[in-house]
Length: 267
Image 1 (cartoon, rainbow, N blue to C red):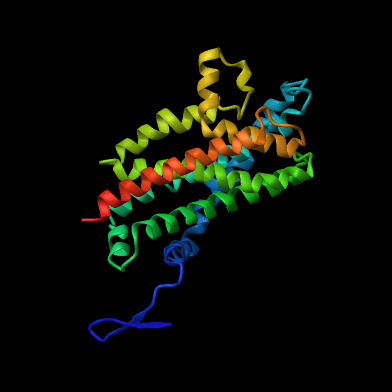
Image 2: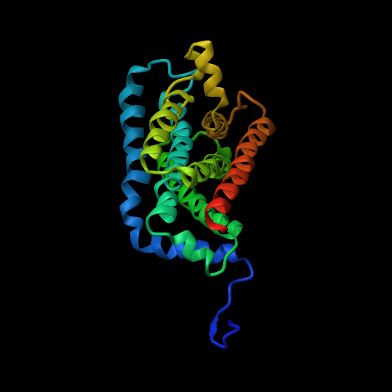
């Protein structure tokens, strides 16, 4: 498929959905670098399951709520993995595309609209989170840590959770003047969420003030939905409530990210 420019030169035409061209750009690059992410996105969580599930879990005689600790832990780790992969792909890659390698500016000159650039890159982030958690879910099922066929519902949940954390992170990374701000994001947001949003122990064990902060994080909502799916039980909140809360984060993040991208790219 070709297009003829005003100057008479032939050039490839953009696909009907231009964001797919942006997604294809990242997939082509990922085809050459995927091996570098195997440890961080797949082997490391599995080693965590072995260490915490079988190591620490051996000392949790009664389990958690009558559930073996490994079975209780796995869905939290799945949700946490999705969050960490999504945020990891939404920080330094986004900042570098603005500040260092200027990829977004080249895409904008293609020409692509701001929404196409943002949607295509977000789609790649969702792809990374989905593939990482799907592999993680499969391996933990082989460990016997998945107790319900409803566990397949984890996959759409992690997609929504990933979008809920990636979209606002895109906005933050587009705004950040330097990468030191990204280190602060991990120190004061990602690490506390991982530790206190119900991944390793029940949120109800926290003091009241910290408990409310944990409930406000998108990760806790993802953890609760994933845990309900893998254990085959009802979540602590209603399913629509969880989904609407995560969707609100995703929509607000998209609007903020589109505004930040437009400020940088549209002269």
